[in-house]
Length: 402
Ligand code: G3I
Image 1 (cartoon, rainbow, N blue to C red):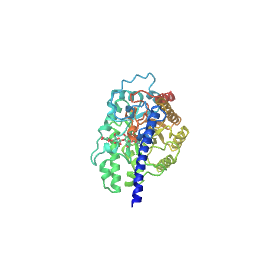
Image 2: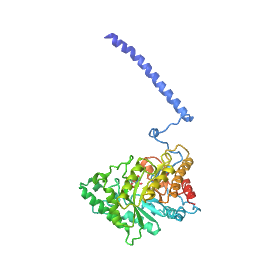
Image 3: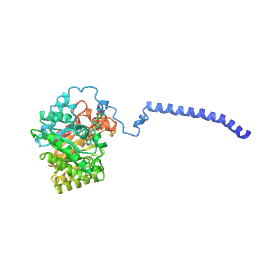
Image 4: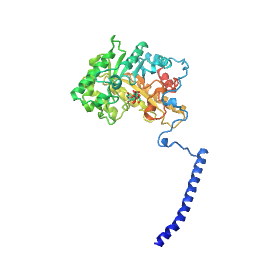
């Protein structure tokens, strides 16, 4: 008994000594680290960012796209010919995605109507907004956008009729048979496309993303809501319903990540080739191009992909381009030069492809980009900064269109 105990007592004083030594050592290390970081020898990052890309120090929260607190200053007039004029001279549509409330900002709408000739409702025509209850449609947001377009001589790409996201609650809770889901899809497309065909048939809404993001990374059909409820037939059915509702509208299959040559773009090619072969009314493919300087496809791949789609008689629209810079570890001005290189590459590929008839970015200004909200990090992915000032990316595109 004594021996064991004895040892522990002896151990006690040793433990105390070690503890004191340990604390001193720890304090010494921390002092050394603090000293080194003050001296800039090492960079200490907030824990949250240790594993993630750092944000360029000069990018402010507004550029993060979170709600903009300050009204942008009146943008300095740009003496150069606007993008719209140069594009129209080449018969090219150039546009941006919008929300109705952004159009109320006079600086925003002045810049948009000067530089672009087409717009896309970013969310206003999706199921959860336009068809909130089984027997109720809400066209208010879509109508505001289409009215703005009519007033300013802009075209509208309708977005989107059959997609697995942003569906209304009644659908997610709905217990319907396959045939009932086909009827629901039919009635929705007939009603929405019919509504925007427009009383005076002026084709303001001249094209639709009929089916969106239905192909997976390996080229397989993506298991989304409609594939589960109806099966692969939902794709040709959606195109037939849209054509029935507006025989003059251009009908597109739209997707992301299938812009260059890869298993996904092969899957998209096989899908649209099948639709063309079975006389399904499809007119084009939308290449979204949500990209960055690391994953952007080469110009050669873009041209080759557009060419094979041309051989199917299909048009191509670049539908949702934005180029993230949050992952680049360079100064903001260097990041924006790299970004301009990607925009130059894509517009060059489009100009080299006669079937590329439209070029759209997913937003007009960094102030309202969806990306920071989606990634949780500040970014500046578009042609105009949060103060509506043109960026090197716009310079690159204007240069190519001259
Ligand atoms: O409308 C609700 C509002 O009532 C609520 O207060 C607010 C707060 O949560 O959310 C609002 O809904 C948001 C909606 O945008 C409208 O602003 C959703 O949360 C948000 O998830 C949704 O994000 C949109 C996203 O699609 C949804 O998938 C983005 O704005 C939009 O840019 C993005 O666009 C898609 C294209 O349609 C298809 N291709 C990819 C592209 C980027 O994801």
